[in-house]
Every structure is written in C-alpha cells, then in structure tokens.
Length: 304
Image (cartoon, rainbow, N blue to C red; front, side):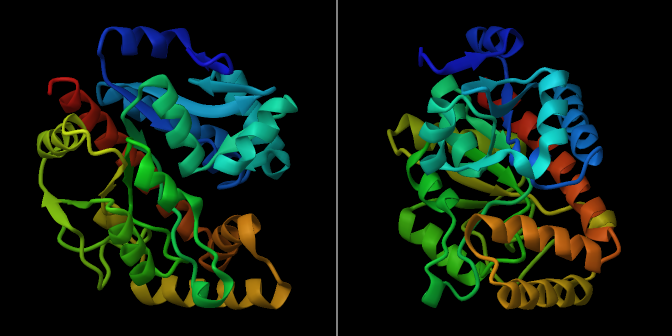
C-alpha cells in the first residue's frame, strides 16, 4: 500500500470484494464549473454511478493525502476553493503532496492514483489532447502520455472541442492507445455527437468493452483505453454554434497570452459565457452519461 494513499472505506470494501468501482476526477469540481454547480454536479455524478451499480471513487489531494473517495465535506471544500486549488497532472503530484496542499486531479493524475488503488475504469467529461497550434507551441496534454502507459480505461465524450482533434488522434495512435467508439463510428467532439474523425473500433455494449479491456490487460499490454461515448442527442449542441464560440474563445486566449494549464479552464469558461450557459448544461449531461456507462462497464469487467 502506498503510504501517501487514503482509500475511502466504502471504496476499499468494494475493491476487496471485486465489486465494480468507477474513478472520477476532481478538476471538473475546482476548475470546470462555478460554485455551487460544481459541488452539486460532483455529487450527482457519484449518485449516477451508484444508481448504475458501481461504487464512485472521486479522486483528489486533500492536505497532501492522495484521496480515493471523498466525503461530501471534502467535495464542498474543493468546490468552494475553486481556482485556488492546484490543478494537478503527473508533474505536480510530488509538490502538492510534499507541501500538504489541496490538489484537483486532471485525467492524467486521476489515472495514476486510480491505478495505485487498483481501479480500472474512470469516467470523465473529455480528455485533454493536442492543442491547436501545437506545431509551434508543443502544447500537448500530459493526459495522452498517461494513456500510453497507465492501464486505466477512460470513458469520455471524446477530446475537448477546443483541441486539434486530428493531431490528438494521430498522437494516440503513435502511443498505441485504442480509441473505442461506444455505439458510434465517429469520434465524438465533446459538445457534439460526431466529428469528421474516426475511431479505431466500434463497441455496442458494456460487455464488449469489458471483454476488450480484459483481453488487452490480461495479455500484458500496458496502457489505457479511450472509450468515446457521444453526448446524448437531446443535449448535443449545434456544430455551428459551438464552433463559433470555440473560435472566438481561442482568439481571445491568444490575445491575452493565456497558455499552458490556464488555457483549458479559460477556454471552457469563455465558451460557456458565449453560448449563454448552454455549453455548461451540455457539459454536465455528458459527464452524467459517461458516469452511467463507466459503471456499466465496471460491472461487466468484474465478471471477466
């Protein structure tokens, strides 16, 4: 057992009994939404996982401890602190732990801590990826490297639409990360159900996905899997509307010199403003949809 790791008793019991557990990230709480929607959404996501037959394990760093499973008070603390909480990827974990700070975990950091705890399925909104203009900036999310080496399946609505999806797909292919389309032949683009980009393999049931994961990892093929789950149709946004908002937000970020780990929170918040809050409502619904599917896959994976 890792000496920096605290696993909530409910989560520990589920893992010990080979019952399904779904990891959930915490950046969405501190950096993804304003208070109080962030706390309400986090609790609703956990409830959705439970209703779908699995145990939720929201992951964060609280006072330097790697937490797998949070109390409601800990979720509220993260939510109220908001942007003051350190956004943690792989490189940030030692600093936040050593200095006993609070940290919200990105996809990469959540995968790392989930693997420490023995959790194989993780549900989130969208993965990070290759940013537009990366040919000059080299701005590529550490999420992709983590997917290449950490054996956790990530259920998401594709990559965030603020990214360069074509280059993100190429990078994942280079790293040998399979991209599974759940009941889709096209890579979802976060707020929209489809894009011009393909997936590697279509899977039409949680059981098929679980069989894929079992085959990959039982063969000793390390690394993650992207399970791309389109946003439910009734919550998807018109492509033209979201494209226009993303383009404007990107232009403003460039004008203001916003780069690195600040760029994604800025862009998502600005897109929410430009769409009159529609993108935030869509964001919440796609996360709930991914939590539901993540739980269903975790249930099936325990039977492999």
